[in-house]
Image (cartoon, rainbow, N blue to C red):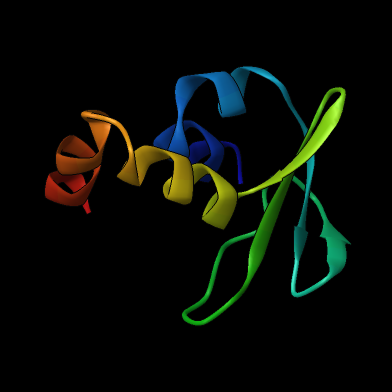
Length: 69
């Protein structure tokens, strides 16, 4: 989960408090499977990967992120 949080954005990884997969809290060493819905819980806010990606669509980082996936 930590690797996923850092892959989304460095700030998300730095502020990660925990993660939910398919609505359930999971340990940080949880291995993701295809089609799982991930929510990264950060200190002070709850941010989903989808929220971060929506933000990135509006920024120059968008093209970099798509190239990395």
